[in-house]
Length: 358
Ligand SMILES: *Cc1c(COP(=O)(O)O)cnc(C)c1O
Image 1 (tube, rainbow, N blue to C red):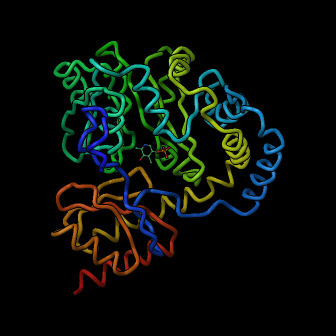
Image 2 (cartoon, helix red, strand yellow):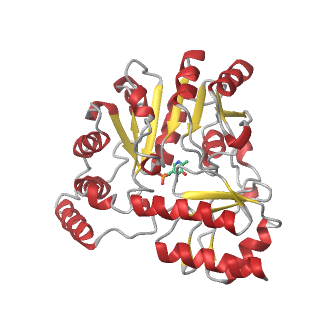
């Protein structure tokens, strides 16, 4: 007996579950987590809040997670209110709900690879067609590239990852506005890494006014050091959020998740204190990788994609033997490394230097 003997959906037959390897080595720089733990004082406050929520855990949670939406609206700022906010168990679930509401059989999602590996999988799981267009030099997507891709593919939904995983590339806001104007479909901007962008650069949230088809997804998994709690959210027009209410499971966000996230948001400055440090380690990686003879790509995220790797598999394994895991994202002659703490980043660069010298 095996999975293939069960009557699974035809389009899922022969597929393997997706997931980055979860290998427990001392230095984990493979999935762009914030490698700084949540500060103890914040953890204590979250414990107390969870203890409080346990008193009512026999009841279903607030289906509308109102307090969390208010806390997220405050964190996003810029005039955004709770009506503009939605949340789910990670932004992956938010993206899935968007495809359930706006995609599905007979509809297509357009993306610009190399980009987030979950987009084709979320399309597949929701029966949405997946079409792609090439990026320009240095992995950039310009307004011209995006508009030409819309003319060619006539998608129902376009997803931009901004800045892009796994390349770190920034996205000009003109690409978003030109795309929005070029068709009548949904424009998703996945801003999972926006806290790592230069503070001076405008986020897609500044474009929301008058654009009800623009959906901006964000997460507490990266800058906010909250990957294990599973909290992602959406910033959009209230009507777009109503569409997600049609497909969400009732009570999809547990009472424990809601209080944990609401409490963490009260400590936003403490939770985000490490962002500057991480940006420094990222910039250091770019400089030092070039010194070691690699070709790092410019990054506005907490990771760096670097080329000039003769054999990514061999280098990946050599680092693993040193207790360091990074990521082979399948781009020929490239690997991706997350910016860790200063100590972790130093350990990675030192190990890489030794391997290169051999
Ligand atoms: C890490 C990441 C996410 C976050 O997913 P969660 O489900 O919120 O943990 C979303 N989009 C991109 C591009 C990412 O790299």
